Length: 94
Image 1 (cartoon, rainbow, N blue to C red):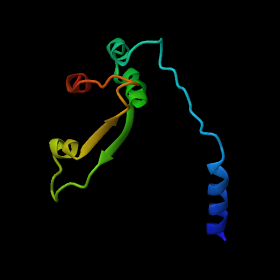
Image 2: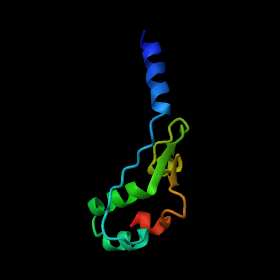
Image 3: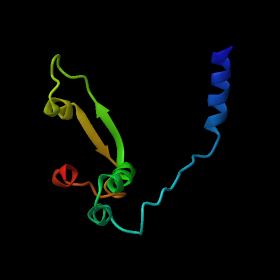
Image 4: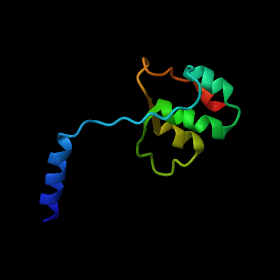
């Protein structure tokens, strides 16, 4: 019963228009300008959230629990370059 209801809802959803939500972060500025204007981690979080498409975390080796090993398992996938500038590693580390 649940599966048939799910298929019905999915079929109806195919015909619905896609929705997009716009969350303004500040003035109409580039990513770099917004990043440089932010002074705290709390101000930078929504900026990164708007530029980051997804984070892919892969399984690590057994016993690999160092911060470097954890970071090596993460892949940050940014929005396409035409939509936002990708921050440098130095900017992310700051």
